[in-house]
Length: 224
Image (cartoon, rainbow, N blue to C red; front, side, top):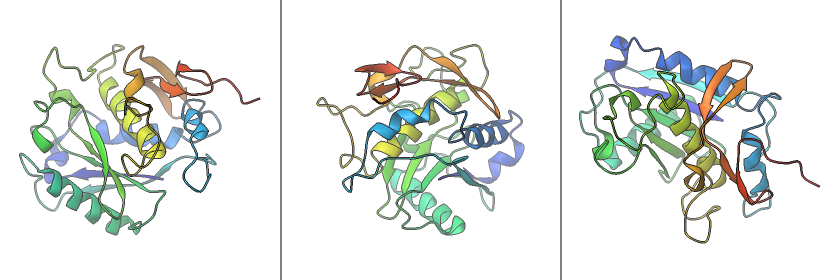
């Protein structure tokens, strides 16, 4: 399950609809209409348990607005916020939980956008989490895909979709699936963005690497 943590009182002033957009995306992912996430089902864990989807993957959304998020949060601070969110949702130690720490406008978590990433995922020692910067702050010419398909919030669904899939297949980085060159399921396919239709809306997404297809795909071919 995915748990959204909108970190900081700055989110109270945000008028771009990002909280609703992300909640809608994860309310559609995992449903019977979602043929995009099922690519991850090809990658079982060490116990040979493969990801399965039985309904919306959104576990909850929290606005942690008691104080402002740091202007330049360190990785340690982001991990601490992820642990706080896990405690809030009651999922600390849950191997199937993902915490998405979404930083507000005007902040630079872990040096973003000057550190060469659009977002990243890691493990706190208790829970899988993602550092998700405020994608609309990415400068023009950035590798972060702002308005990739003409939608104002495209980068949020493309970048967070990337991290979501990699958190499923490699929740504790370097212990899960990676290609021989070390790239994860999303890293191999950072192009050819497409619209994915879910029951909760239409979202720009990137393909994912499918071993079955030996290619980057939006929808993998059926097993058989």
